[in-house]
Length: 188
Image 1: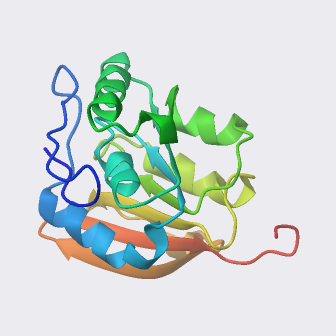
Image 2: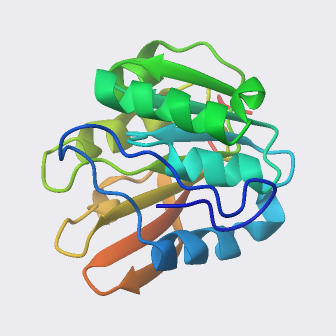
């Protein structure tokens, strides 16, 4: 796995020990960042279920102002730190070893512009996160959520009235879903 564009282009990224992660394919990652190209420069980026940190590092390489990496695995945290040092992007990053759901429930950080949510497939991590996005202070109406999932994993957006589907792309069995929050009277 490597960084495909920007100031760290071509740097190979270390994978976490074990077989716990599933890195985004270059084709999927390239498409994701082509769709977001106008929004990356100066953005605050959140990489949930960060694995090796490939998505957040790609965002930093392409001009994001800041990226937070969240993963519960110590192997992933070690790989993310090594990759940020190797790409010389560590000064623009913060790493959190924590359960992703717990992180978004408790965190009091400045709002994010782009959030990538790439949980392990078919493990039940996605639904609880989608349920609470609209009440988290770190997200606002312009935040773009990008979810990588298997085609057979349903998001049940008809039941989630607070989430607005803005785009969706399929890559074989992999789907990228782009969402925003619907405006609510008590959130600005």
